[in-house]
Length: 366
Image (tube, rainbow, N blue to C red; front, side):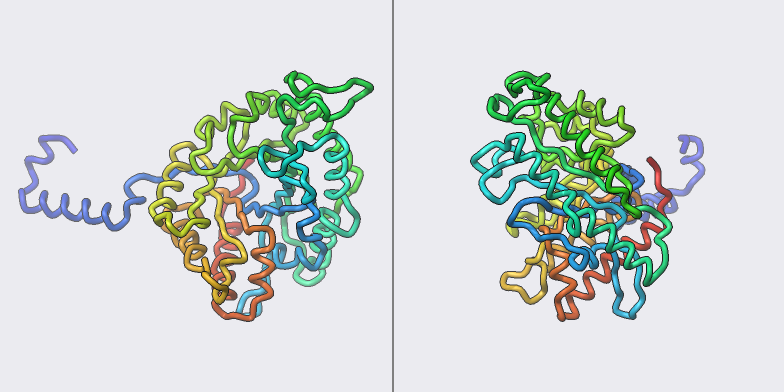
């Protein structure tokens, strides 16, 4: 508005306009500037911790509440459109990332994890069969469920990983680290393509390290290799993880911001707003966090903190425009599904309503 134009408005009207504008911004702070979050062709990506002997078997029955949601009024709809299969440790003292178990995984441990991912009747196989079964109930979903597969970390300095093509690899050498990673990516692609799943599309790969210190720059060439296979590279750094703001420079196609609000009741709800602002600033997606402690009647329940995420994602426009990853603690959704408490059913109906409305509203982009 020009000075000339302002001079033509009475002081009273100008005061009223200014007051109303400021009052509106106080009530609706996100209306002042449209937040910009990251989008991919996966709207809602649920994390499936699978592989370790301490995890769920992930049978067809266990997958059902992650694939289909039945609302209180009886109607049914597809739930998550993306599934991220990841693992940090094998449950027997061996780690696939930094700091999760005392021993670093060797080649035979990587092969063991491959066998777990592609085990008949479990994991990907069970998910594919589960979708087939649900199609018989409610018809085809109109989309293929997209799969993201986790990549183990080749630990810098490790000397006992094993051999490839008769050569003993030394993870003190970046090229040897990369050779092991390329081999694992190739194994995932080969096995996935050989399985010929009816309902699953391999969308990309996930870097299990949640900050950029141990990676030491190897994510860029890994990203190039993944792109040469026409797949995408995903990352979910923890709150204020080192390197999170440089996620594009590190080679990732999307990064989801972890708020880490859920896990500590001493953390103020202001953290959720900060996380959403951070994701918007750096054009990231967002992660929602809850687990079985969210059950309404459990001792020291985290139900209200789960609810905080839903409310915050509504208020900040995350549900309206962002791709979202969902940390559920492994079996969080399954435990909610098994609960007879109406409050648990209500909150899952609320979440599922947002997910289904988002799928029907958002135009997917790749």
